[in-house]
Every structure is written in structure tokens, then in C-alpha cells.
Length: 145
Image (cartoon, rainbow, N blue to C red; front, side, top):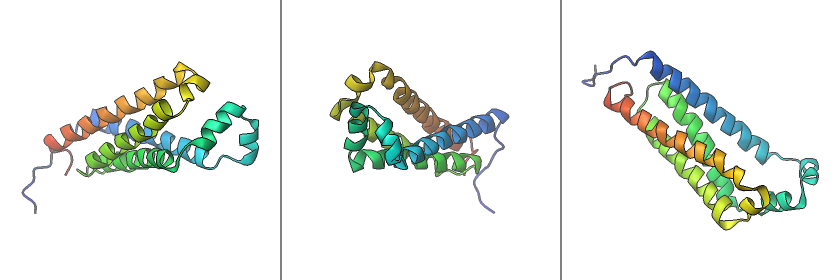
């Protein structure tokens, strides 16, 4: 028997955790669609968008993969009520930041795609930061062990 006090989380903890998992699984789906883009799909893109896609460096793609897979596994850890959810969620946000450093500062994505492409990355990072604090609160309340 451990000396840690584990308390039962409220219903909203489970709701947020399920939403987090669904959100991150959508991210995994987006990554896989990106990673397995066919030549035919590339040919249907405008030249500018295709150049953006093909010009993305491996480290930015790695940031994307780290963001979505760490987020999904971190969300599963929340549902399993494990403390290791928090470092995975931190890693997820860092991966997202790495991807977006390339997208917004080292490529001409804003010029090609327009300012509207800023909205989703901001939402992703804000929600990721929320989940980090959510996991911290879960640890403090004894919901995660």
C-alpha cells in the first residue's frame, strides 16, 4: 500500500480528459494525412503551397510528430490518472512551438496562405498550455498518481 492519497476526480475531469484525447487524436490524424500525402495530392496543390509542403525541414516535421503523439499519449495518461501525463503534455506544446517557429518565422507560409493560418496554431498552443495546468492541478488534487 502506498502513502500517497489518491482522491476520486470529479466528472468534469473525465470530460476534459476525453476532450483532450479526441483533440489530440485529430492531431494524430492530421499528422498522418500530412506524412502520407501522395504524389497525386501534391500535384493538385498550387505551386506555392507545394513548395511550402516540400520545403519543410525534417526538424519541423519532427516537431509536428512529437506534438501530436506526445499529446495523445499524455491524454491517455490523464485518463489512466498518471502523473507522467504532464511531462508529455509539456513535450507536446514544445513540439508545436518548434513546428510553428518554422511555419511563421522561417518560411513564407503567411504570405502564401494568409493571416488566417495563425488561428489554429494559437488555439493548439493555448489548449496545450491549458492541459499542462490541468495535469498540474490533477497532481496537486491527488487525481493523478
